[in-house]
Length: 383
Image (cartoon, rainbow, N blue to C red; front, side, top):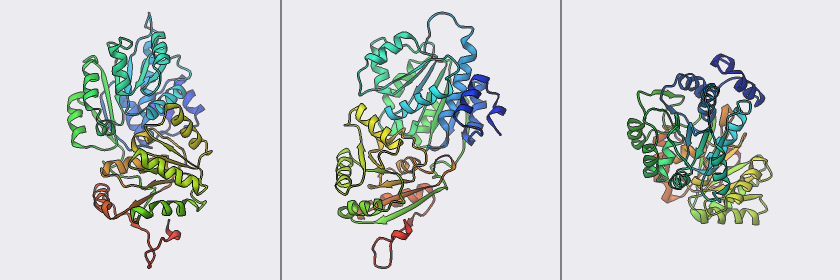
């Protein structure tokens, strides 16, 4: 199948082709027709499967078809709720790309920056709003945002949204939406909390699942090193000194840990930057842009800061600290192996983290390859 067979309008097809897309991914092929028909949708899809286009393209098409019959100022007709500013910005970029010939307007609102520009854009009128929960509620309370005319609502990365503690905010936002609307919920995992949310927000949804729930992409080569916590930094430096690692996203458990690792890599003359919630939005965006453009080879990040990072051909994800929630592992390594490309996920596991590793392997139904030689030293040939 190609995009021409999905009954997309000419302005959107033209934009998609300008982006170099010819064949839709599986989630796009399955979800776009459902959304165009106006049905609620539950999308079970890992990061990297093309789900942003799966909801952005049909939303743009539906709104474009309605635009000619509407009069008066622009009102928010589609709301896309997402957990982090990075992911919100990424969605905004994709809306700009796919909607460049539609005449539709969108804006992105998130915390950590001055709201002045966001308020001015809202005042000028937008058709689509991409938002993080906290800033959205703030602007709603200040009467800068009304959701009365929302016809399409997207809850993206729903599992991560709840994991980050946004459940009360999400419920408050949903309560302010029109009862009659189309709702699209996307999640990489189907935790019990997500199933409860589905029952509340979706009406007779079509379920679209492109991979087994809580699975990892087959094209990702997963490996683990058993290593003491005190030796993790030297192991990381040893791995990164091998230039076959083209780019690496390194995950730490804490903000302090991210800064500490980045400083150690800099001392070892490895080009690295840290990104986490204590960094300013400007600093985070600069670091992210440097990483995407390959000016920075290594980005050290916490889970929250890494959401929305979309880097084509990212060769390695390295779990400096294993997550204590196995679903987070699925999210992390999904940064590589995107769109059918290969990738490598390397995890460091100390004695205290072995229980986390067992939980991860149970969730993904796969045993992760252990890399050691007979002496217990690092087997560089197996990285």
